[in-house]
Image (cartoon, rainbow, N blue to C red; front, side, top):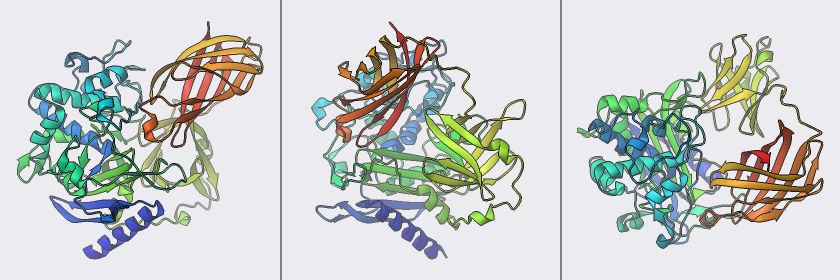
Length: 557
């Protein structure tokens, strides 16, 4: 029976990785205190035809976060700090900059509620191009909202966590992690630095731009020295299985305790959730209910690498998946699905099982468009099923209780969706994994169609590449220019400004340090409207490898 399950999971994984043209991947299954199966598939180096094994090393990207978080919490066990202590109390030569009264705490850093924005660190192909970790934090540790107001995935928070580990230890954080976490866990092929041992085990990373060919990526560094803690762990499927074993057994691996049991329990407890959802973030781990099972997981992806680790803490089953391709589509290795197969379940779904002959009356009150930061979800009723749509994806919703539904299909397959209602019983938002989407109502801020649009408009915005200022100079209804991320003024194409609305686009070079991710140019499109004396709306930024939308709020100067 066990062999049959392994064969089923193996066939599933091979199929999924072949669909993505992944050069090579490594996998490990954990049960209780044991690795019950591990293997490598494909090539760690396509050009040299070097086969992948379970001992192949990969940069595991953001799977680094629960690892560095565990290192930090060892210092809590030593009495050095409490979770609700302000972070700046412990920082010395660099501080989190904030204009808000409430200060981010260590708990905020670990649960993505610090008020720090989404930020992507630069890529360097020469070690001499890197800056100190302290300087990297100084440039990016600027809050954009008070703590606890919203969940926003923050790489900078985990760079600070690694920096704190080094401060508390009195040595570079990679040295502490090697001596006090990796050695007790027998993670001898893991490091937060590219040692000669790691380079000897490391796969060749590969990348793909949209539908282009798979291309080898040159060796690179995570922007700082030592490398950024948020995403610079190198490890193997076997080593990360040791880490999972400790997390599934109260902080113990082979009779060696790495965390106190109560600390491990706190690390796994729900810390931040969108609205009334049962899902969200624990301390560093994403915490969701997956087909009725509590699941802790983390994905990772950066230039040439993707990873996914997931486990059911109550069932003590876990999966590690590492691969040497990032195709820039947002795809991550299917650890959730592999985990479900591992516990003997099936992945198939028949929409006839959720179809209602008589559609419940309450479903009509749930339908509509829900939005979050320019990303929309649509809830509809179709042929007796309640459907969730996200762009071209279509998911079926299976009722669990009055407010919760199980999602079938897509990236959120198997997780819970929660509908929230106001005091009058009307639906106001849906909560899905770590995000809330508000029901779109009639806009009560009318566009000022008579607004005088010509002149210079100024404002600030935050993008994953940093904090920027924009000047939009509108000359007339068909002519305007705007400043790019580097401050250069560029003429807008296809520009229109009339009846209170402003649209147009321009192209500009990506800043040095970020072009290393694989794209040289952004195509920007602005969409603004005059409201309450300001121009409000968004700017879409698209490159060969990414697409993002940032809010804009400009005032006339």
